[in-house]
Length: 209
Image (cartoon, rainbow, N blue to C red; front, side, top):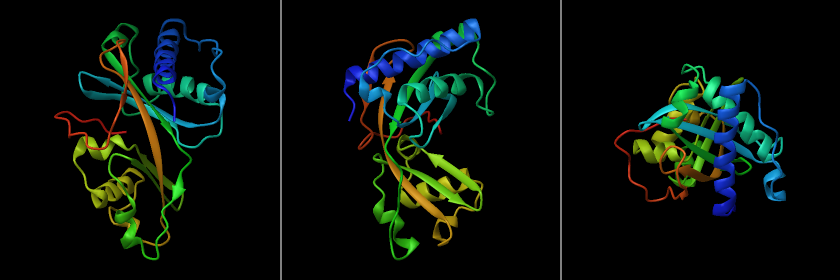
């Protein structure tokens, strides 16, 4: 688990990285951080503007130091998400930043895939679905925001991977889950808090990442 101070540092670094890249066209120098933030972790950076998704990209698995993965994810979410045009420099003041630090993904283990829903806790688990070179990831906050149950979550993760909604029932489909600790700004550039997803009510305007 990361402390709130560490979460604030992650969000602040993400905003600095985006701002530096948009203004100067280069990444900032990687800051000196506590050892925990230099260890490999998966991470996603989500950008929202007036409650709507503006960008979301990350590193699903822990292959590089968290601080490096964070900076790359932040800049990528602002400039390389193919669903959106790049964020403009003067637009950043309207964008809220959310950082999700991921645990190591673990495969769902059941004798029959039909039992997968019972292994998923909405608001705690994120999902990765893979089959035949296709892959899709949905963060734990997505089913909370959309009001999905576990079966709907599995189906949408399959569709994110470009598969049919019922592909999770196929034994050749690999389904993994992970946890995420989420830190976000309460307003653009403002105070940062830790987001508790379990029990959170569905938002009127939802993002999907």
